[in-house]
Image 1: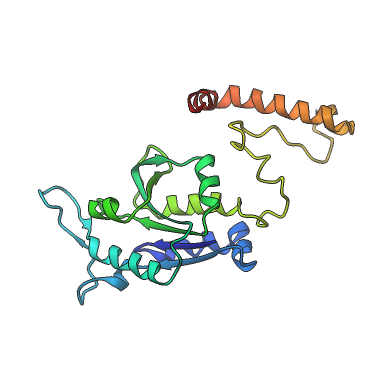
Image 2: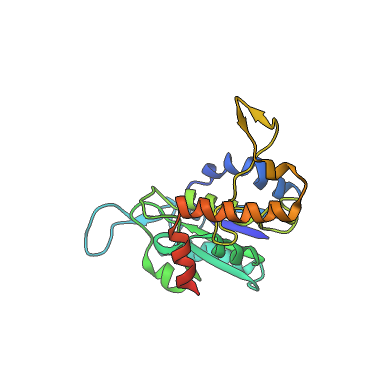
Amino acid sequence: MKIFIISLFPEMFAGPFAHSIIKRAVDADYLTIKIINPRDFAFNKHNSVDDYPFGGGPGMIMRPESIFRAIEHIRAKSSLESSRTILLSPVGKQFNQAIARNLSACDQLIFICGHYEGIDDRVRETLIDESLSIGDYVLTGGELPAMVIIDSVARLLDGVLGSDSSNTDESFSEALLEYPQYTRPREYRKLIAPEVLLNGNHAEIKRWRKQQAINVTMKHRPDLFVDKETDE
């Protein structure tokens, strides 16, 4: 998969993408990530990319020219087949595991990170396939949401996690939170791991894990059951 990120602050991505699963995915060529600064496509000698909002109001708005040019540059050098352009925005659809799986099937993703008071809406009207949000709260820009979504999508790419079952057994894969996990020692400070996990009966272990996942979800995220019923 190829990922392009349009951001005024490329340096923000250096740390998160230089470690753990993302780094391994890049090193193994499952994933390539290129960060593009829209200032490189600015329309004037001062590399200005923002201006005052029409109609008045606080703050500055990102101008459309440099973003249009950056997108056109990306599309001219890559295939549009199985490609999606995503605007990170508080008005977007809330990101979830189902969307992550959908995006993981794409060959190319382009993320546009807004900043200041937002982006000229002609970008949204013309260039993007969808807007996504990671929650009902305000952030300084789209960089952190882009990191979250890319991390979630990358772990779903074939080969990235190593084990085929690693991402299918995780929380939200079936609208359920993950069941409790235990490891050695069997007993620690008089706290004992469940006997069922140690008896070697795989069918019984599977049933126990499914019931525990249901119990955990009912206790902590009952809304997931409501959401699933609504989708059906």
